[in-house]
Length: 310
Image 1 (cartoon, rainbow, N blue to C red):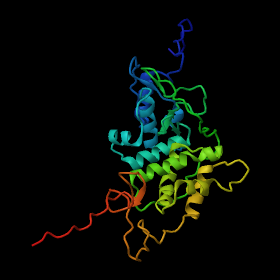
Image 2 (cartoon, rainbow, N blue to C red):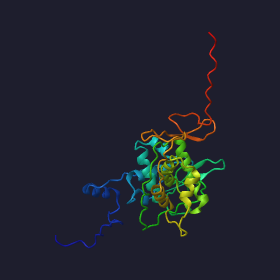
Image 3 (tube, rainbow, N blue to C red):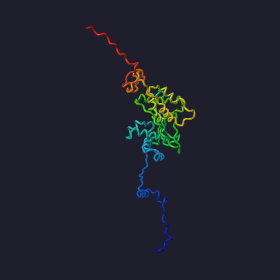
Image 4 (tube, one colour):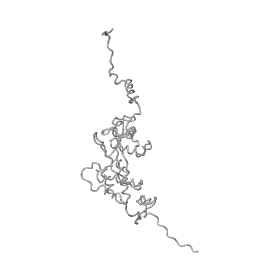
């Protein structure tokens, strides 16, 4: 009874020892309390996402989710802050911060360009594998990625092991950030590279610096004066971070508020400083509480005529 039958063939062992068996792995996960994957193969409408993004150690959860959404979109889809804020409940501030995270880690490249008509536009490229020059404009979506938008320059992706880019210094803010004023500020920043090619800025950097330029323009400085203040006397060596240098100049050299109103008369100490307006006739900037005409284009009041007899 205590002897073994040596003629019986031993039981065949599992090829993987049960380590990769789906059912056995499920029971092990159940006991440990970990996640249980119930996976099925996708055959249509899917996007390939790398674990370097899905498990990124430095990106926030919002940034990772936003990157996944952007990579799933077809080429040419709008991914500006206003469009994304209308699609998701997080709001413009949080979405803008998430986009800056993705740009800092190389998952987005955004540059400002001027078209042949003079309009300033933003070029956005989504990178599913940062640092790979041959990657397309989006992730591997099932419908196929669209062509990569042509960009005059690309912001280099952060190399592995390189510390993350620090946030830009705080900059002054305008008292009245009107759309016309901010548009003029963006045009000033977009034109800096014509004076010095090293001053090529990304869309995120322009978005950060534009309010400070608007604060300068709000002090009755012409755009040419702001351009000169930002480009004059730059160091001859390469600029490793031109946006930080510009932010420092815009904050440290901010001119004082002029003591004159737009009508040429000295302003009272407690006078209200009205926002800049564009003249409806000559398009010249002037200060007024409401839109209208500048001093030179206002119709002259008719002189009082003779009173009728009797």
